[in-house]
Image 1 (cartoon, rainbow, N blue to C red):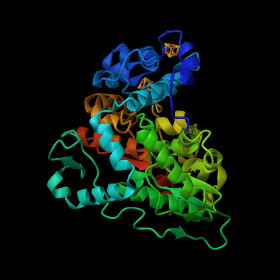
Image 2: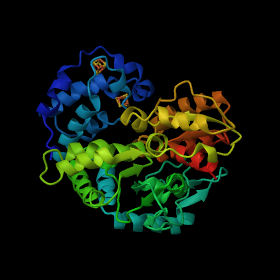
Image 3: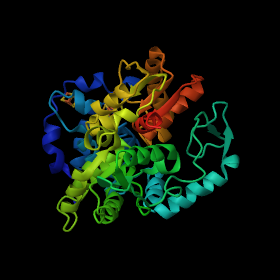
Image 4: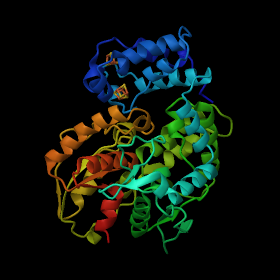
Length: 420
Ligand code: SF4
Ligand code: SF4
């Protein structure tokens, strides 16, 4: 129960800022807006006043704390300040004091009830002809500005969710280990092919897979936006579910979900009787699929078939800077025969999606994406490989709107294609 944020929780971090401005150089948000309040230095100064109680929530103040949570400032800061923790403390204090934009209240209400989320998304799938029109790229464009910018091109929700289409337990005879798969919302509702690829990689490596049907959103959209009480409830129920399973590991296919399991639940439940220890155990067991397939249960390289494609790799912020999974996706790509891999100039630069940020700040989000699209175009790649479904959605939007005709694959999908 460490979400009672106050100044003391981050006071030392705030005091370490020497106002050098180095964080300006890598902040994609600042590079688009040029506002000091966009960059870490400006936000830290404001956070101090919020945490001291000198300034109270207003919608304009909340806007100042909007951010991609890309961790580029953390990586650049010469003082090693955990900048994201300062922002989060300020957001949590504002929410706790009654301040939360309507969009975030709606998000909290939707995500905390998996049954309602399920029903809402399935209804949206049935009504997709009413809500969306086909885009020449094969995606969909919204007919009405119902939370989505009208320019945006989004993929169809899958007619059948990943979890609805799978058995809860996929058993391999003589399995060398057994894992639970936390699918995450986007894999479940939008990109079930990624989920099927994860299961295929695991089972072909002699690993049995449990896909608990009762799993729900990892709570990252809430935890990152300061809605800590709901995030904590969700962390508890996720721990109740996953800690009770007889598995050797929990595999995830998204850096943000992985951060929830490996970091956020531990922070949210620090000191919580009956939960703090379980949160740490679950964190230690959780592993991204690229890490798992490369280091823990290596796939059989003899089975790999040639893929004749030129590809590049976009590193998701939460997978790379967040979880430190940087080498494994590249090792997997380089191991697949026939692939022509051309690296990006800035593979770790944020794509601009940042979850709810792309809903509330579409212009800035898209302008950030344009840098990534230019980098990708410079490689001449046919396809981009990445390890995050939100980055994938953002890249696909850009490819569709700019008519670039490129594809995006999750790292697991690329590997599963070669393992066929
Ligand atoms: S780089 Fe670090 S120390 Fe320098 S202004 Fe930014 S947050 Fe402060
Ligand atoms: S997390 Fe990213 S967008 Fe936010 S202040 Fe830091 S560098 Fe800028």
